[in-house]
Length: 521
Image 1: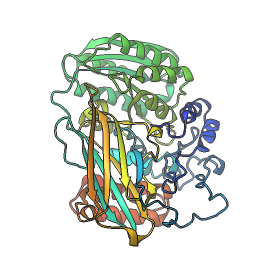
Image 2: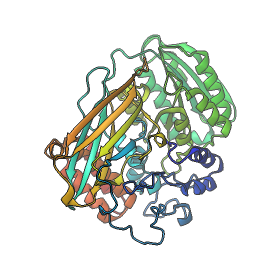
Image 3: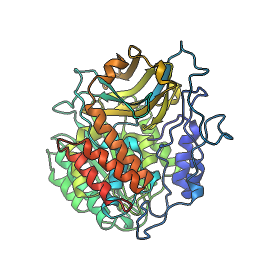
């Protein structure tokens, strides 16, 4: 979800993009990641800019739907002082203060933001290349599972790992921030479905929408509450305050089966009715969620965006979060709608490339999508004075904590921060120097402020385990190769994925298979 590290303008820009279509997105593309003027901070150039809202996101070898113009995809802005310098100057130790460590604040987005890798998978399986601007590397790290050991109850675990790069003085650094496993039984839940039944949902999108309801039904327990409103040209309340009798409640399954596609789109009134139902049946102590399912064809107006934000404004307390579900189809799908509403609503964002994915996300990973284990997680990284961030594969980072919005962490899940760091001179790097990771958060129910710190020497890190880092690097290589779209990058990424998978990890097996389907492979 989009954060506020540039300014309030970024949030307004996201809404404008959804309202104005391509023009709004072109305007948004001129905004860069914010950063200090210090030499150790460089804006991320893999920020996952939004794709154009009209036309295809895929770029097939056979002349599929078109890509946006060059004007809509400007190059990232230069670093301060580089405007006339051409290539970036070499990073040296000159002017650095040896007494001042480098302190950075990191965001990888909420750990349950996971749409773009699944959207990419559907395009690749259709023989099309995903448009690079639709790919957000941090969502690949969220979607594919990197296994870290759970912490003690009530805590989170911080696990840094490092590996030296091919060039002297460069390192890949990965930080895993792992939550506790989900409780059993889970808390009661109240769910309000806001379902797109406009004519564009006919066919596979409608089948995926129905599957979402069935998958949620399979995960419910006796006493859980369900509301349902459908929206097309008008809206219709299908269920209000329905108390289910357990998994696969017959009334809920029948409501899913009755869904059909027809008419235009009136998201505004559908959301208003949906949130009214959610408020009417809100209960303290329950998980309260609105689930918006759509093919992305609607626009979200300012009123709708404000409505969503209003109900999530206590997003660091127990509020009504919005979960966005994109149904495709992949070629015409535009995630500007879901990007805005899940940003405002502080909930998960998932994409379904088939019916089975609905059950994967809303049955197998139900707690991860719906629940919060740690609220408002802020991660602070302190590096020795001679390091700078060379490339960051998360959502954003800054030397100013106020520019990075804290994120929620789901149960049984991990935030993954993967980055390349560079020393100003390999000769000044000392094994005994320390790296510190500090995570601050709030307990999910008491909102008690909590903190954990991990300080470790570079020698301990370089000699330590790299198990999770190896998979993380493979996932990053996959996402970045899709952005590059060249045969060389794709083949190198596939080699890395295969090398990282001696034990037959099914997720890495899938990634290797998908890379080979790219039209440029």
